[in-house]
Image (tube, rainbow, N blue to C red; front, side):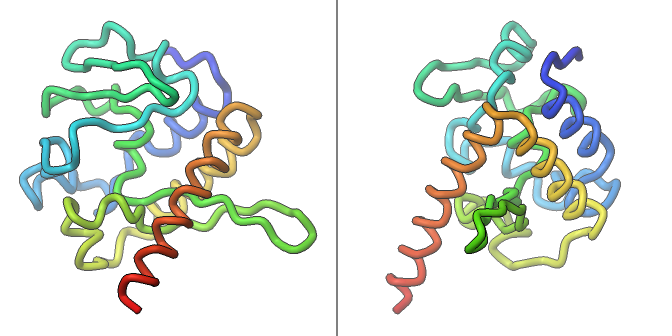
Length: 168
């Protein structure tokens, strides 16, 4: 698979062989619940992924403000989009008081209902968490992927705040 964007190419390479459970396909532990409708009906695509994955077998892409990918439940692991490669985590963009940005890896609050690793807060393989952080740093180096990370980070922070308010 050829990726034209350097930041995305680096992120894909970092996450090619690692999973939340090390080198073990975590889908074997839960019956690949994230590859079913239990996870919703689609995954968001990062910038440049639509062009990369269009026409790939087993994927259907819908347009919108953010392109969405729906899969058949089975795909070649090396063709997975970034959202699947980092699942159930997200590289959250944090900005300090001096305006300096950094990446903090969090359990994606959208994963909690579907992913047993997220809902049970299982301790994930450190190499995977580091790879997600490094991938986030690479993605921050490109203006389009950085804008997507910032916007999604804002949204996730709002979800987290709402969850805290509701738990009261």
